[in-house]
Length: 145
Image: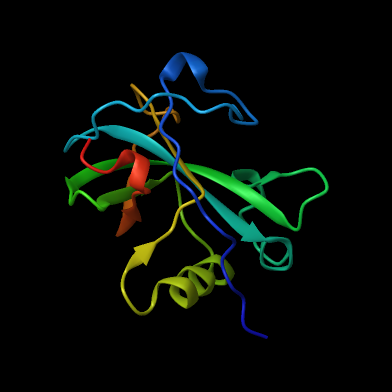
């Protein structure tokens, strides 16, 4: 059975507004620059997540078919309509999640991420292993920032 990614959007929020779940009201974006440290939110289908050994990195969303995982990333380049980022995964990724990444990322190396938020320091107190680079699509209201 082929898995498809959920509908995605991007939200950039100031550090003081970061909480779980993320704020529902729109927040005015700030400039997306190279080197900006952010966090990105991936939504994993529950059937994939349930087979995964990465449960500690996934947060259950109540009454949802998805698990959420917030992972740190660094902006590599702003392409105006997309942002290339390096995902800094705090550990190893197991085979099931890796297969899922490959299935949604095999053609263009472009992810439509659920959300993106700014952080000022590493959210995990360990050295981060750089896992892969991907592209974040920017919605019209953020283009040109």
